[in-house]
Structure formats: C-alpha cells, structure tokens
Image (cartoon, rainbow, N blue to C red; front, side):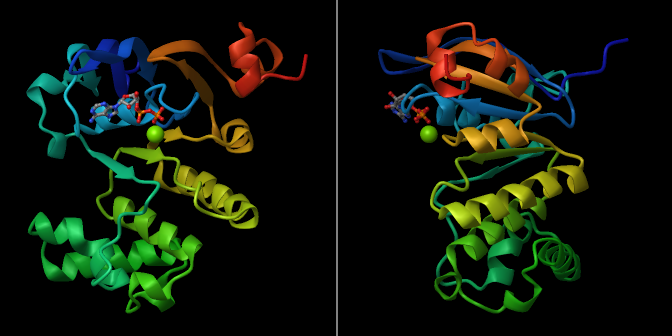
Length: 241
Ligand code: ADP
Ligand code: MG
C-alpha cells in the first residue's frame, strides 16, 4: 500500500473577490519531506501556505492532511505550525512567554509548558535568553524564538514563509544549517518559501516553482538545475544556459 501523504492539494483554487490567485494546484507532500516553494513576488506562495495552515479557505478543489479533507478538520487539529517572515513576536512578553504562548492559550498545564519551552530553548540555543524581551535580541535570536514557538506545539508540519529574508548573509547561512538540523531532529514535514536559490538548493528534497498561481515545474534540486523545463524555471533555479 502506498504511504499516506502528509499534505495533498487537489485542484486547489483560491479567489480573492474576482481575482483568482491560486489557479489549480495539485501537489502531494510525503511525511518527512522538505519541499521548497519558489517563484516571483505575487505568484501565490504565501497564499498557498496560508491555505495549508487554514488561515484562508480554499475556493474550490480539495486539501487533505494525512488523507483527511480539511473540510472536516479545523485549523487547530491540522498539526501545523507556521513561522512568519516578520517573526510576529509579542514585544511585551519574554522569550519564554512568547514561546509558551500557544500552549497557554491551549490551556496546557504550566509545568508542561515549562518543560516543552526548556527543551525547545536548548535545541535552539536560547536557554540563556529566556527572560529577555524581543527588543533585547538580535535578528537571528528573534528568528530562533519564532521557530521555537512553532516547535513547542510539536507539529507534524512546519510552514516557513521566507523566514530568513530579514537576516544578513552570514546569519542566513548559519540559520540554514540550523533549519536543516531541525528538520532532521524533529522528523517533521517542512514546506518552505524562499527567494534565495542557495536555500532552495541546499534544503529541499523537492522544489516547486510557481508562476501566476500555477505550478510551473516540480523536481529535485538536481532535476530543476540540470533540466529546467522552461526559461522561467531556469531563471529561478536552473544552470546558466
Ligand atoms: P507571494 O507570497 O508569492 O508573493 P501572495 O500569496 O502573497 O504572493 O499573493 C498572491 C496574490 O494574491 C497577489 O496578487 C496578492 O496581491 C493577492 N492577495 C494575497 N492575499 C490577499 C488578500 N487577503 N486579499 C486580496 N488579495 C490578496
Ligand atoms: Mg509571500
């Protein structure tokens, strides 16, 4: 029997008013897979993540999580955590409180929150910084807190929307390694949007190239690099021709 897909999009479309921004996307993501979305600004990358997270509803088609249609599955039950480009930390809360916020909302017991936050902080090298406020942190540390907040919910799927784009090149390189390590350690599925070709090439099991709300090509980094189907794909990921 074929292994059940972690996330499956079947003919997914999304309209905002009259504008159709996702125009029939079919994609299956395997458990544990690292899938990277690339494509020009406005092509629908963030919208696709938001649909998968349940922050937006699909207009037509179907979206399945572990074989179950989201029509029968509330966003909270999807086992999905999203990490935003802007970090979206609460400025008045400490690192510890920021990381535990979702668990507190979910009425998880205090000692259990403490345990989970401590564990995630160790993994992300934030243990010394738990009592700081976001403004007392560097960009890279803030981004690690945002990732930590996603980790403590122990999701099966992480969605990352250009998580490193506010960091300088050196820090991006370092965080890229940490995200790869996180993927290995958490044994989770990752769907990751980036503008950065190096991130796409080094992190992805498969890259999805999007163009105007449709998939232009899907393949391993090597396939896309070596055999881009179109000039458009080549311009994002392909070898110079
Ligand atoms: P990307 O992340 O690839 O840059 P987005 O998914 O953010 O692209 O946006 C895709 C298109 O959908 C854009 O034209 C954007 O203006 C439009 N869009 C996104 N969100 C909304 C919304 N809530 N209402 C109306 N239009 C939206
Ligand atoms: Mg976006």
